Length: 136
Image 1: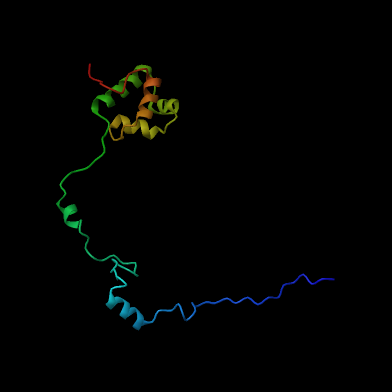
Image 2 (image 1 turned 30 degrees about the horizontal axis):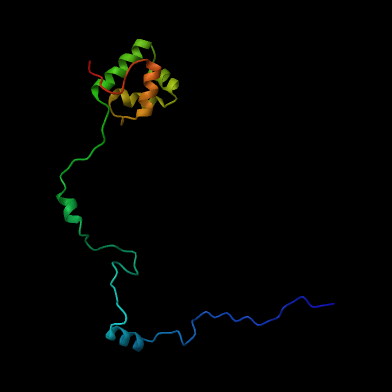
């Protein structure tokens, strides 16, 4: 019967061999001779970012008011007119287009951000044009 076990010695080292270690004196001499370049990293080795960024002044000087486009008054009126002409409630319209009733409320109150997919569904159910030039 042959022995299938292999009992060769395996060496696992946690530290690098002493020949690969760099001493402080060796590092200092390499820095002085210019062979190694040291770079200071921002918040290197820590998780804090307490220094002031360069762009802070730019952000403070920013005066633009940024906001999302909302539903226009013409679109609000067109949705309400189309819904009442069909004799539907907001809940019935929302069920017909497979959206939440809150979505129809937001569109009719002007708080919604216009979405072409929702407007396309509303056009199909209400049978009126909602996208493009609404003024006639």
